[in-house]
Length: 159
Image (tube, rainbow, N blue to C red):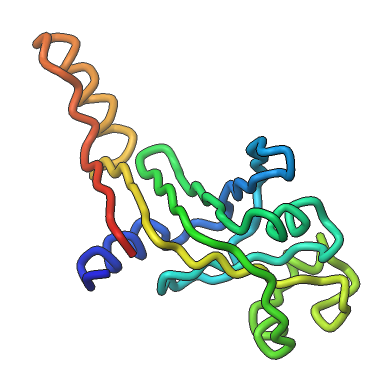
């Protein structure tokens, strides 16, 4: 991954708190659910907490390939990679916070609490500098001029 690619993806992920984690169920269907991102600085890995006995963790046994989508009104990032349960008590305590405790009141030292790491291998992003207002103006311009809508930047990067 080039440092420019990494910086751009990290910049777009900064401040995002929720990602949609998509796993593959044993019968091959895709299942998505919102998950709280635990790592603010993106270095190629995303971190989540989950119950060790949950369906999402069970899905990883047969199919570790996942997708995580993060977004807001003007920026969207889709990351593809592999997820795994990480047994690292110190890392769990480091990432633990009061919001996590609301979902997992048993605490970070309980064996039922799993730490998931998603190692991203690629990312695709859509970014509209200027936010929603710029998006609305670009859309209006496209309608008035008959030109194709330019929704901003769209790139795919290998991580």
